[in-house]
Image (tube, rainbow, N blue to C red; front, side, top):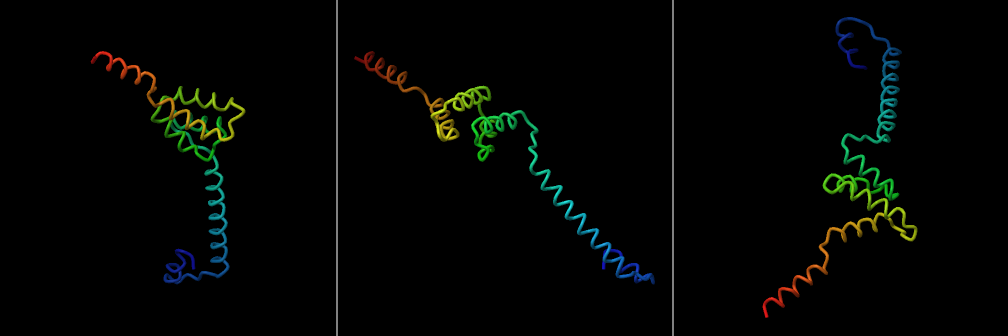
Length: 130
């Protein structure tokens, strides 16, 4: 029985089986349509913030849709212009097989302090001590 049918029966109303079946079929159709609608909506990208858009653009530029959440997080926490420039630079290189991995390597290298300046400072400190 469908919801409300029991209360109708208790009040003395007669509920036919065909009405119950039609009601259940309507639920099945509507729930099936609802699930299809959810699946259709899930395929669409929902962008609410600027960093989300930039992260998705970087993923598309690199051809690495699989790791779009990583690029969104990088865009949220890092310099967005630098990330976009680096992604465009990596995408233009034809000899790179895995552009996402190369992008991350280049990003990591750009964040590390340059060793040459550290060595010069260390050498100048040694000379000053003598």
